[in-house]
Length: 606
Image (tube, rainbow, N blue to C red):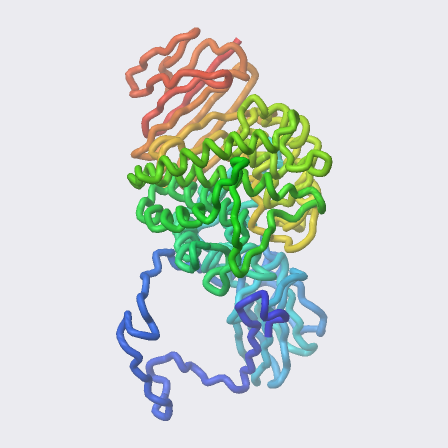
């Protein structure tokens, strides 16, 4: 049995092979003495009610695999009664398997190295040769078998199941630290996805929707259609189990409202899902729940949102991290502002013109009230003597409630010196620093926060807390978002990746390679920078337009070619007859509109 039935749904299984029924699923199995099945009715009759066809693809079954340190050549051997530690290539969801020859009545225990693992397998042997695969999945970096002395071990393997192809999205770069960090982030995302997205695959396996919003930020750079469909499921289930205008975490088992997570879910999950997929049907389904939820707040005389009554199971939680540093008021009001703006975009997409003025009025009122009450001249705070919160100030930038004239002050006074937040907010802090143009500081902070984890060669996923603590595979780590969206600079600019940008911010990187499994097809970006030159190789799928940028940081650009033909020369665009047009320029990039196809853009500078 599981140690804590309050936390986790699944059970550990004890299997006694001495009592097994044989091949009972075979059509030829003698079942004459079984009770006949009872017809319960045809849906939508009870107990089935209205059934919905599962749109999430089946898990990929990778088959039985050898452990890294126990290849087939190591078998057979006779157990000495000591623990057998079998290494996985990285932390993944597995069902362990064994083949042994043993006397009857001996118990074999299988667990993992994960201290928070609550799922174990117990197998009691029958006489002779036999095999067994655990009925419940578990996760870890190693699988540990306790096999009694004298048992002949014929084979040990594991079966890995995953949501889609883990190799669908990839990232490579000239700095091994960030490349390994990406790999660890990707592994964390996949080990926290199965029949829904979850906070962790050990302690709870629960659909905390703030964690899901964090996962959504980098899901589209890492996962194929199976991941997108699983996010659709998370959105629809969350909304389906709403009550009295409230939607929250943990449905269908529980409706746990964390207002900050429910507000975060609007922009960073629902809107991002639509922006990346173009799935208007799901947007149309979710929008009324969003509108009702935002209407639970009323605007106060100070221009800030007020809510008189919380739900029955409400938790006023924003983040872990350093105690006494969480500025909850600024965080919630920033997230409410962010949610208003994203809900307005939803209304516009769905043709809900009657709702736009409601959003506009609240957005205008809140922006004025927020800046009047919380801006200190150097940063935002509800109590300047107590809070200089990196979370709250990052959200002020990301939500748009802070004007660009405040960005530098926020970064210098708060986001650089104060490292208070947990990984749940860390990617948002770095995201805000990048929007403020401080890519160097964001990368430096990322390295400081994750260095000790990246340096642990036996660790392949990321912790719940900094520098370590809680689960060692927690969904809310999202450094991949920053590396893809801001450093490679690839992100959708129109719904469904019909248009996207590649505006790299190279900093110290000399090479960057990204494969994005977009809804339109794989996008491959390969960047190579040398002194006074820049090459961008791009494979762009049909139905897209890429806004490709040449960074001005390489020097005074003299010429740019596309597939060997000049498209820009000494300050002016040149039509090469290939369908590429100018997209203008800004302080950081020369930009071009590039049609689908395989391209090599090369720039030389002086």
